Picture (cartoon, rainbow, N blue to C red):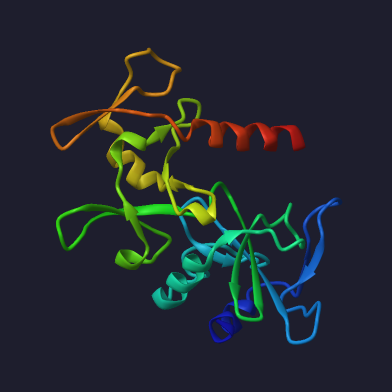
Length: 216
């Protein structure tokens, strides 16, 4: 992981102050012997960046598949006692602690794939077939206020993933609204089946939105 960071670190600043109530950090800092800390950001397209990169776009994001697979398979909630509010996720790598925050969710589903047995899979964060969860159409959630779509994700990373806007657009014709405009969709039509949506993710999404609003 250290080799991959070296080139991209040239695009970043040596340290960042994330506002009056958020901590100052420096990439690669060592709070204890033989321990290093790095800081990352995931955008709403599922692209991973060093958090202090001056420019965040497709050119500056991490693209090496092996690195992305390892990084996101390790991703968990940050309960380290350090930077938990500013960086709520953590991807540990031996003595390296990689702190992560995101635009919405750290898991972003980018492609719908078909597995070797014909099953449908959602792939996330650049890992192709190596970062997938089973596609469960009845568990999709669309928020009517912003059109964002969510789907269950890996439990240890919060259990919810954002569906990338391009993929959400492809799925959007399948949503049906029996409760009228302004309400979440009630059904999703997929592969000649009409699935009743559970909307079980709604409390998790609403809770996050309300918490962020209270902090503003």
